[in-house]
Amino acid sequence: MTRIVAGSAKGRTLAVPKSGTRPTSERVREALFSRLDHMNVLDGATVLDLYAGTGALGLEALSRGSAHATLVEKASAAARVASSNVRSTGLPARVVTADARSFLAARTGEDLRGDIDLVFIDPPYDIAEADMTAVLSLLGPWLSPDALVVVERSTRAPAPTWPPFLVLEDQRTWGETVAYFAGPPL
Image (cartoon, rainbow, N blue to C red; front, top):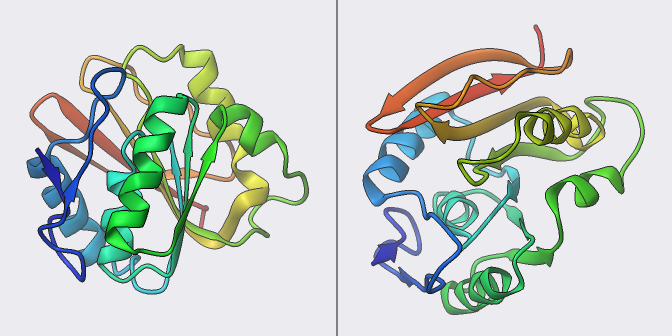
């Protein structure tokens, strides 16, 4: 069972597709969001949740005070479940059924002039490194000058290759999951 851990929608159960997704465990989400609370990045944030699956990360951010979230999921079955979760929680999110790279490529322009404050990237653990690098490199025009990008990976996967407009700020490991926190250079 997946549910919202804290905030205005605390305890709400989220639907999960029968297969094809790997929802972030409640324990990891609790630790991750404790870190984000400490970093003071959630309140009023505009969130982009790539590889959204059930939408749990974006919806958790909204429950904890973020302003709006866009949940991007390629698998139509998972996107339907995420849409159902948005409706059931009543949180201000929209679901886009699209490949993360295609979605991000639709916006061009200058890096760090966008409106996204917080990005979650939680791809399948077997994502090709070239795809991961491409997704990170396409984020530039979407990000606000103070944005934070959170990448969730398996501890067995290599660390992401960061584009010039992002630098690693922190890294936390919980069991088999590692989260990387990156933002624009100071």
